[in-house]
Image (tube, rainbow over all chains, first blue to last red; front, side, top):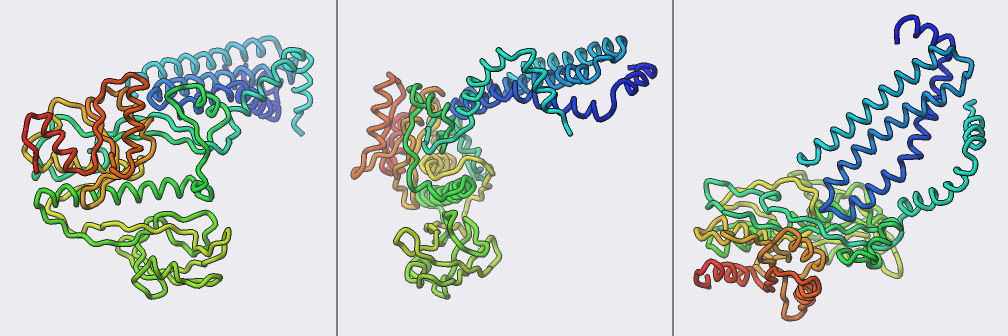
Length: 118
Length: 347
């Protein structure tokens, strides 16, 4: 985000809107990933000999959760001001999705690399 | 005011049907994996090399080719409904009712008493194995606070405290038993090197007058010829006693009993080398088989062969090939391993 984009963003979205979008992002991402986390914990304690597999899954779901937080954050933010200027809307999705994908890919790579170390 | 309504309505408008269809199964899945019920699920665990619990001074011991292993299993008290369902389906898991004795014991107290039991079994195994080989071990018997129930009323006693006197009386267990109901009583304790005084209230509960404590006797080692270091571990309980004693015995004798075999087992031990029964034998045999154990020691008491019977039944049920060896004393286990090495019996 360059200086001009930051200025336009501040004009189109207040701090309050951003904070609320973040809360809803956290909420919806948690709602989606919660069953998977519960599954990992439930199975992890039952099948201790497969603990490393569940540890890897845990890391993966953690990055999936972060991915979803960012996606829902921008999605909700866009809902708050449908009249936000087009370049800003486009920039938000580009930046947001890039960050989210980086986290998801990094998390997945970390999970796979952790497998032999566990 | 945060517009929850706005977001929910927006989502409902867009995905009304899908959300309604998903809501019930979602709640069912989440609740079944979060709500805990009063049962116990026992699951196989893993092997633990004895050297993870304590180490003997290297300069005074002989090298060992293989570690001796104790076996730990997981007991999930109050599992979730999902874990209960899986426990009922998978043959390697077993489900039982939560024993009444587990009531009024917090998870923390359960863990701490497991640690006390592990430390006590370590002392007993050192005494049993070293005295068997003629080493001097100076120790004294003390009464230890083994468990504190949730309902106990006291001013700071802790699991693991050594009880020196109750109301000035050194005969601790009898003094606690004879203490009057409905009154506070004085406990003189040792916590580490520090001597302290606490009080506890003895009250009527379920028709019985009790402090809400369980005491047990423990050998405290004062001086020992072969120094050792105790390591911190999350694994608790006394069932590693026999294997600890074997590890110590093997470390101080020239013949390496571990050579060529993966040896694991379970069973408590006392200072005289007697092996006692334990829980979770079925899951321990499953664990041992998974980790390719060759020899698995299990308690065999003339008066109660339940542990041995369970181990043999599990081996036959799953078609395992590991050797189940029932032993009543440390000497029997040593002699069995000596026979594997082609040596003569030690007695």
